[in-house]
Length: 306
Image (cartoon, rainbow, N blue to C red; front, side):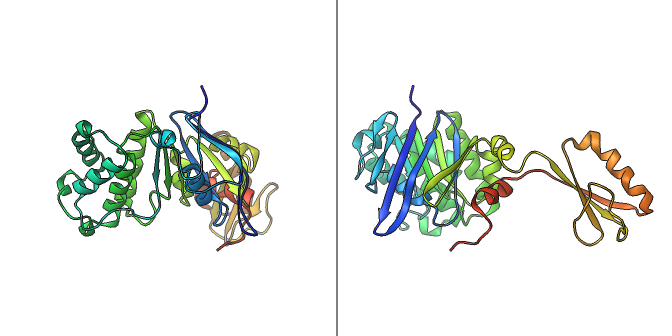
């Protein structure tokens, strides 16, 4: 069976600017895929192309084995849910009225609409606010309802652009719970985010694009092994400055040294023993594991892009 979403060598120019250059990815069945990249890397252009809102210059996009076309395909639309970063709700309407409207737009059968709306309100935690105008909702409540409106037709492939941007920690946690429930029900989810710590925790796989092309893809562990390696940084905070660094150590700031290890449990006692001749006390120990942020910077560089 083909993957629910396959993007092959997609390119898109805007005049002289190359937004996408040979971008490829695969969203597998029942997975949550994080699409990462610096500002201007082409993430939003790729999402809009998959949604059929942009005509690509070359390459192919297949959703559930059906080719996507410029302007969108009706055959693709039933399988695809697209939730933009911008809130796309009618703020003078209530939560129920917004869900009724979007359910109608996305072709939810009238016989199923009431049941779908009841599910959406429970799923988002908004059942007690169902008849309240959206303009009275907090930002987190609006974002949760925005997601519900985009998946009311039960799409099998869901695209989300920065789903947790600008929301409070409680709403952010609720949104991740919502997405995990969709995934458990069989949906395949791709999202963009700049919250790399969250992507590391929730994503089954990660795709990194830069300058319009795919530069890395794999699980977090696979990307770590391919770049920075799985060693841990052990940082020791000492009672004073150390004059002669033992072999293998490096400075880590004022009264601090660091050492890289593969296995903390087996190697830590020997590391501590190397400090004993200095006569200093170890006041604190911090262990730093590999992070997605370090992997991301390895692939994309450290320069700030606006």
